[in-house]
Image 1 (cartoon, rainbow, N blue to C red):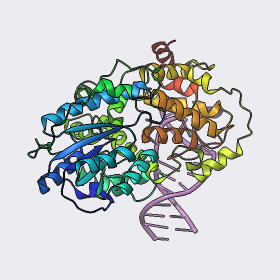
Image 2: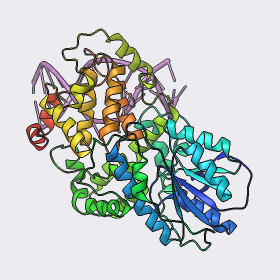
Image 3: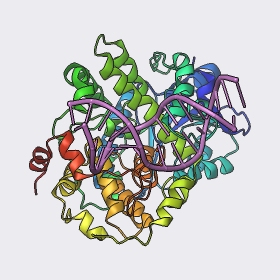
Image 4: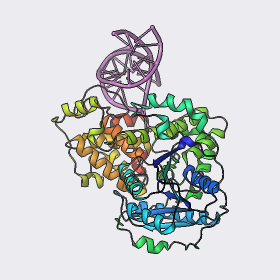
Length: 448
DNA sequence: ATCGGCTCGCGCAA
DNA sequence: TGCGCGAAGCCGAT
């Protein structure tokens, strides 16, 4: 049984006979997916068939072919897995508020289940879909271990205020997943396999940012990466994760972003291992507390991606320093082309452009410097989000918006000694990096 | 190498 | 109302 606290009703609608459909969006996987499991539970109870739909919009924020490619390969794998479970998959190119209601009507669907997403575009989709269908629309938080609305009913001030709330209820939610069953009731019409090449042609995205080859998309690759991480990197994770030139991080974030792996699965597998307590604690802190804090911020703060969303003390101090002299002011193009005076910053930017992933520690330095080298915090926020969303495989994620808000707007942070431009926002420096890790090695690794 | 001061406001104890 | 403490620091003194 899926814990009912993971489920909310978005639109009550009228209970109706007919297939149960999972509208897959944020959680693009067939294993360990509470939304999919909940849909199957409803379908079994009612002795109905079930199906999965994915609505593919022709463009989304600043996503490029790099992102669509990673995503589509993952969904293609999901289609195969679902077919084996007697669950048909339907890819609907177009806009959800048109495609989903039309699909519901054409196929006499009885119930719609969606996955949880705090970002405004997708909330808008769901709101309008809900208004246009007369059947129940559920939402399941398949993303977080503790459902976002259970963890806290309000925007949290920092990790330290969310942490105890999560810790209190974590044992109730950190449970193992049931397996998805081969569905006993078949969909009436025989479904056709998606024409994936045809689907690619419907996209209206920037194809100049290309695919990356250091990481393979899909949930099987995600599981492999997790096993390899636990075997090879977890033991020294605490020691190496903040050392950018060393390869000490999990590399799971693209999978987590597209929902090709569940954070709860990662937490379960890591918890099962013995020893390495400090490393495990560090990973679980990042995977659960900090990730859920990002969802909390974006869910409860409608201005999660702009200046207005920053705390009052941060807005005030940034306002007080608007007229401070800037030694360097760079344009979006300068930043994009890694054309600053700072070799370390340029190396981080190149890492992101070429690999679609920047080391977690460097993301902080990178964001802080964008604030320092632009004319205003608004401009800095815009540029940081644009670059992050365009190049990082895990862009357009609550983690990204929250990270930028931390760097530039003091979100989830505290005041620090006043200095030019930053005011009381925490500062980071080249010398600080130099004292913590081998900056030359990192620059060499990401040279032009 | 390590330490203290810098600085704000939440949340809890009282 | 007081107090402890926080998402990843910096800088200068020792």
